[in-house]
Length: 428
Length: 180
Image 1 (spheres, rainbow over the protein chains, first blue to last red):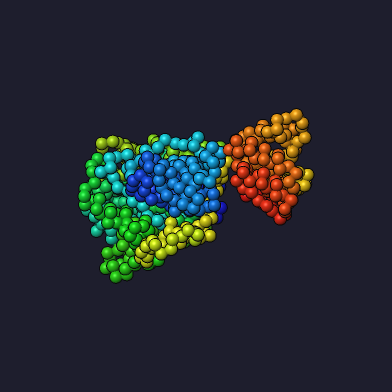
Image 2: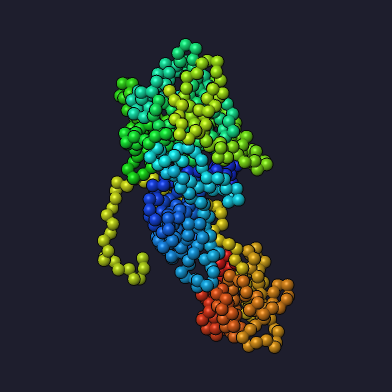
């Protein structure tokens, strides 16, 4: 369990909160690049870390992420005209560039310089891979651009989606480092999902439902190893890297693409669940990419034209008790992503961790909370740079591997856990 | 709705009843709950404001106002220095020093002239012109009834905001609204 004070510390991410300040020290995913597909395209409302923002791409292809509301009378610039190098409020014509600087106030003489006094908050918006990233912290402390492998491989090797999850970021993220639920909640999908099935490692998952966890500190966060019994004298290890504050990678299965997540607060009661799939050494096949678009693997289906999952709390996640009885799904909810999201949302907007009873398989969660708390407190006390900002911390991979029982996984998989360009992922 | 609306000429967009309401949809984005998330940072820089009382009555109005916590507004009254150009006036600051209006207005973002009579119509015209030459936003507040006709006429060519008020309460309201 956590005390109420620590629960608040870790779950609240507004601009005046410690965790909010820590999130603002990282580059975080803000939008899919395809949400702003061309110059002067429609702007997009974006809420991140409890701040209402507007993303747009100007006539010269520059991206901007600015305060959503016009400084004049508070109109939402979502109604704005994106034209001629800026977004223009349709109410009285005030115009802003991608930095949030007001560049025109039609009612005032241009030579008055009035518009130079008007500056909306603006954050950088930079395309790396198929994601637009932002940094909402001080410009003076802006870190190098993201170095994650999945967004730095060629476009044909990677695919990213995002979905709106209606709960706090931390309880969503904790699902990503909790490998023990796979043998239960996702047991049906291991047999049928085109992006999971067929791997030899799945058999170990199915046969041993009592994994033992070993958690090892890493420079950027943790390596969370879950071992299950394999052939005589061996363990099947699934190693999940968690990099602060909210990056996780799922251990791979066979030659399937490798997947993982970011969990980014929209506000304290909603988050974006970002899901990526990539292969380090080959293009995704047409079938794999189509499966991702169709919502298989860690991806999901949508309410058309939106990022809200088709299965959502308004329709009880399209619960299918008959499929549950037939053993096609363990919980009655279709799809790995929504199996997770449905249960995490069921905890409420922010789960009350004073009431929980953790067990040995929750070791990764316990350590992650501890690392987060320690990093937040160090940053607030002495300005210490949090783990995970250094690009080297981001060059990690997940691993699945069968090892002799006496081999410690971190030593045995030291090279496998690092990004090695041109070398396949280590997978069973 | 506006006077020049041309009702009935433009086809309305087709209703889209099947569009879902999402967090980013107007129906939710405009709720009180969502508006709590407006970014908490300032959206404008501090302004350099000059508030000028054109007559003793205006100085009395200003005296009551200047005690409020303004953001760098400087309260001035007309000076008495002789022997200056007919195109200039002098202004007296709160510390008592007297400077040419042209110097006082350099670097200002906003000039607000306050009058309770037409006694200083000529000075109002000069200050307004100096402000306009510097592209400074200029406002005039006249609390004088018909006695203020001349000063209003003097301000009209240069003031982008001109108010004939029934009482002096308008001054702090305007200064607040213009972030003085």
